[in-house]
Image (cartoon, rainbow, N blue to C red; front, side):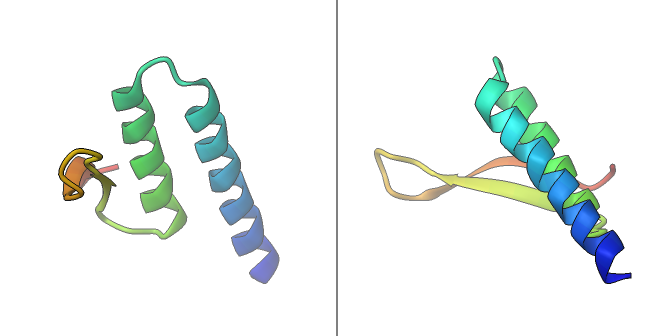
Length: 67
C-alpha cells in the first residue's frame, strides 16, 4: 500500500515538473497541474492560487470540480 502511494506521488510530481519546465501555455499547464494534484490526493476538486506580484494578493488561477 505504501509503495503504491509513493509511486503515485512520484508519478504526479514528475508530471507537474515536466509541465512546469516545458509548457508553452501557462493556462494549459495550470489546468494539468491542478488535475494532477486532485488525482494525487484523490480529491473531487482542487484549485491553484498565485500571488499577484503587483498587489501581493492571492489570485485564483485555476480550479476544477470534475476530473
